[in-house]
Length: 50
Image (cartoon, rainbow, N blue to C red):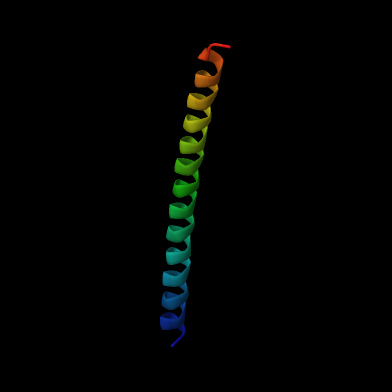
């Protein structure tokens, strides 16, 4: 009984670590996308004729 309980908690911990890793990957991709868009917008603003 004790071993099976430890196994369940081990699987729960592994699942949480996997979800946390995926969350961080998505945040990194979101940051890269936002800074890419900001860079394009700022370059466009810098090259506009006034």
